[in-house]
Image (tube, rainbow, N blue to C red; front, side, top):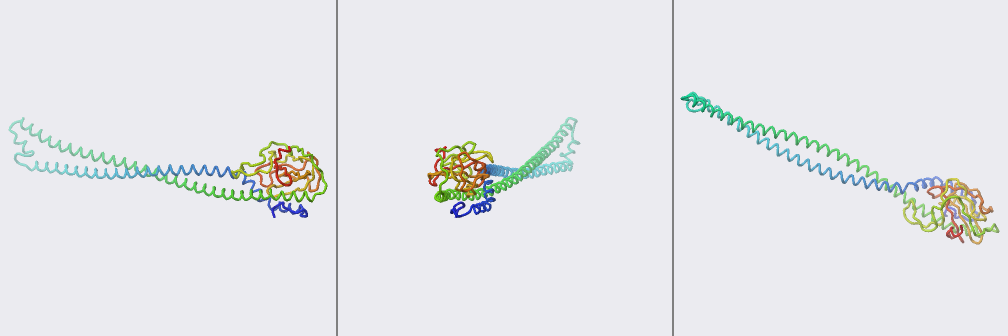
Length: 359
């Protein structure tokens, strides 16, 4: 049996006991209602940002891997060039040494002996000039080959430093990607939890719909059982100070994110603001009623009733007669509520109608 759907012989104490059993769960649900939609939206936005960061980081890692491959290929090429330069230098050096040794071994027309056989000074100078050119050419060739080898070594050192720098950057990017992926995993878990909570909230809202439907039966039973009582004027006053924040009919639910039927009018007001009877009548219910929280129902006669929900305090009891404008409760946020406000309903024969038609 839904909360509040009770026969006339069920005492108010049982409703209060049900209130105590559900109060902790309702408080937790209220807190979740206040932050659920915002948290899920923020989590989804952050997850999108993390996924973008992971994609960008993957591209950067791919670029560093390409650069590392190029650097490795360049190092391999330089190693080959250095090997060729060393071989070339060794070949030139060996040839020069052999040529010098050969010229030193000559006794007749070759080598240094050639200078001693010069017939005059001019011939001596000319032969010495030619020999020096031979040595100079050998020296120049060896110097060029050595310079080439030195340049290759410097290039190797530069490419190796570049390779190390790229490798370090790649390791940093890999660590960054791991961090992004860990954060994305946490965001996915958060979104999953939020969706699970949303499912629980939807179940609670479905219960509220059932409470509203059972309320019609309760009102019909209580009105049928009532004898006599004060009859209202049919012209109602505003039940509390505050602006209308939600009207009767289909509305966008601020937490669930889709349209739901709203059976009354909400008045935004601070916690503890007084609630008064919209018209004269008899109290046929005062207590906890499921998702409506602390509620008061007044019978105004002629099948017309009013309901005042989510109150923080109730000032009246069942069977009591009240006059128009009399204090009956205080604004609160009990039951399925997203904050302090008064949910006000007008019902004809138990069925909700637009309260603004009577105010």
